[in-house]
Length: 174
Image (tube, rainbow, N blue to C red):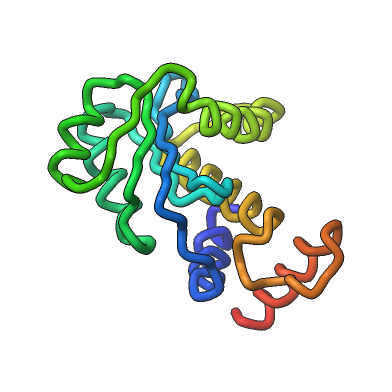
């Protein structure tokens, strides 16, 4: 997992659809070596996971997360977040033209999406390193995007066979 997940993600990057212009961003918490760490995630309005970042620090990670997420395609017109204090400063610096929405219940889309990551991590015996949390979070997002059809991989296959067809195409690319 640690070795091949980044290789698969890099091989699939040219086939990835560009994210839409409405983003939902939030952080969740994951235990790594017995300590709570932050996992920042962003999805677009169609459910495509844009980026994942695991960090031990909250405010510095928000800035780093948005810098990385903005490298994945076009800039969003609207960003929906919770009411965390770090977001307005970072969004004013990096996305001054974007509309920032922090209304109550507006962020339910990303909150529901966190549940899939947590359900994947629950049966595991825990994470020992921050790098493991980053790789597993990125790998989970990659597979989730493949299943939802956000890559031009396995598009000719039946929906229940899309993941196997996509990995077959990726194996030929590597």
